[in-house]
Length: 214
Image (cartoon, rainbow, N blue to C red; front, top):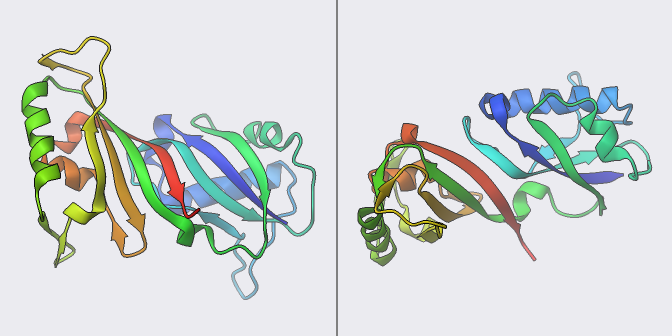
């Protein structure tokens, strides 16, 4: 049986890495008495696969994970059972059964959406002009791990989110990003912030939506 779990990751767990997150889920599944399936070999690993690794420091309200079980179980009370075993900051919001023979979850992600909140005062009008400049750019040459690449095709959408009370300057201005998240073509919010001249440490970043192949 293969189940897909949608969950929230917030609070101090924003600083929990990908591998440690796997261990947290393995412990939670054991405590919830789920019949986890394991790989074969000298070092069996639980068959748990995340849709897309979340960078350290980012929160999320839309993480998705597939978990393989040895046999079928009822899903009726599974979110409640898992939430009772999870630490604060992780919360299951939805569980569904998926086809065991469906493609790997990681290969189905096409894009990711983020909400970036500025924690320092910023000139909204100036930021709007910078965003327009990025959108109108034909190319944004960047370097990652010693290799050059073009950031522009990885930015699918970039805009300021509407504010109930717009201010020219103020803390709490939010930027919406939808970035490509395909294998070998992944846009990173911190690199978009860099071309916007926004210091990464003056922001809070939350992943709000993962988009999959139809």
